[in-house]
Amino acid sequence: MRRVAITGLGAICALGRTVSEVAESLRAGRSGIGPIESTDMSQMRFQNGAEVRGYSHQPYFDDRRADFIDRFAQFAVIAAREAVADAGIEWTPELRETAAIVTGSCVGGQSTEDIGFQEVYKLGHNRVHPLTIPKTMANAGASHISMEFGITGPSFTIATACSSSGHAIGQAFQMIRTGQTDLALAGGSEATFSFGILKAWEAMRVVSPDTCRPFSKDRRGMILGEGGAMLVLEPFEAALARGARIHAEIVGFGMSSDACHITQPSAEGAARAMRAALRDAGLRPEQVGYINAHGTGTAANDSSETAAIRTVFGAHSDHGLAVSSTKSMHGHALGAAAALECLATVLALRDGVLPPTANFNQRDPECDLDVIPNHSREAQVEWAISNSFAFGGLNAVLAMRRG
Amino acid sequence: MSDDLIQRVLKSIAASKRIPLETVTIDSSFEQLNIDSMDAVEILFALENEFDIAIPDDEVRSVRNVRQMCEGVERLVAAKAAAAPKP
Image (tube, rainbow over all chains, first blue to last red; front, side, top):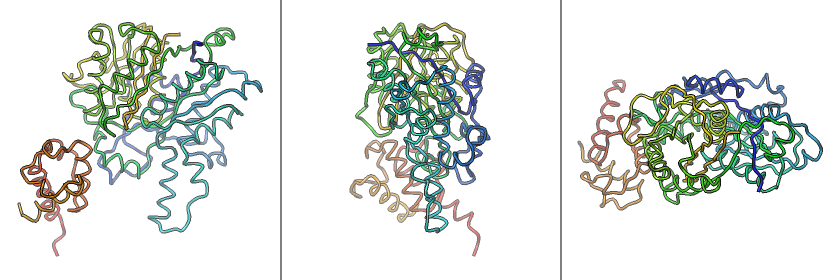
């Protein structure tokens, strides 16, 4: 089996429109959470989100092309462009024919769908815009990336709610590892801020009325986010041979399903996914120095995840294992969450700066881990994992090594 | 608390949880009725529709049994009546 290198990074989210902007925000512990501007929030019980503030397609797409691409898929293409440029890929006909694209998205082009349904249900019109279907489909991100670069190899999209892009990156990792492809673009994107879907989140009563405070005793729920993150993966040896910059290495991938409850997390399921990732990577628990937690900031997730981490890492949980939730800064970007968090983990390994859990106020005995409260920490970590635990109990954990 | 209000709350819980009405009483706890967090938000949705009220998240955090739920609904219904314009 081949080793797998991450040679390209791309991102757009509330923390910035490029990887270096995102890295700077993570390092500074600066949260991108604020009042939601892109949707009328006057009838909503919560007001805050982690938006790509002031986003317009214009610097990225001409008007006619943008007509065809929902905001969520625009984010996918923007992140992919940066990742491909970063990796310095020289396209050849052979590479275009064999390269793979695996994206994750939870809700696809929901804002386009929302507008279409308002037309017929609310405004009483008798027709919906003809591009509603191709803009809404969850695979639109993968499709537009393939058209952007002329990639004609295997391309598909995985939808596992909040784990979507974790499963996507894991799948791409396995494709490189087993020799199915020599280049993969993997990640995810999401654009969650449309009225109908925000109402649905409101009804679940899991969104915080103020901000996202993972692992803090006074946490009051999650904060929704949006954006996209994409990675370029290739065989480690090939990356070395062409002199590519290796940001980090993916060394393992673990999956599990809770088989328990459609929304409540299971510590056992989460623990099994982490164990599977460590086993796949050939790592002992005490070798892991940093965990980018799923850390949603809900009462249930953070205590359950803490219990799972303690089960897997035992005494190491109190001795040298740092854990943080960057959702405290970029929000919960659903299908893009795992990709953004994988990126944050790569940056932590590469730059030797562990991102903090922002907005942290008060220790919770049920979340008694070293959660890097509020301020990033300089630390050279060799191995890290990134946790994603979805609604529906579908879990994905990526293990990474410093490049 | 009026019997009518209590009955409507009990019916909303039974219908939402799909359990016989006679199993739900004002003295039932959520634990006895096997109501988990997702069941609870569904019941709140049913009550908001039944009484045409909006139930704030802060109101529900400490609610653990049917009686507290009835009391909360009664308070919100009264607040709504007080806020309504006089005929």
